[in-house]
Length: 97
Image (cartoon, rainbow, N blue to C red; front, side, top):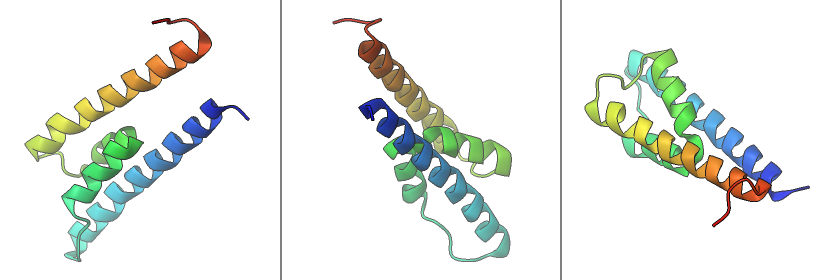
């Protein structure tokens, strides 16, 4: 198998985990239970799950009133998508340095 396949699996797994973390934290917030720390939510995004975090924010309407989530989650996502596209373009030979 090619390394690109493992990269894709990694990002898919981290994205699903980040999405689930947003949903779990929203449910815990409604119930008044112990919450997932915001640092953990950001860490899951930084590790490659930014698209899952963004989707979770929108679908669960969670953390949408916090300016730092509104500002930094899309920035993290943009950096990650750009980096992933650059890697794919270099691997396919469409972009050379």
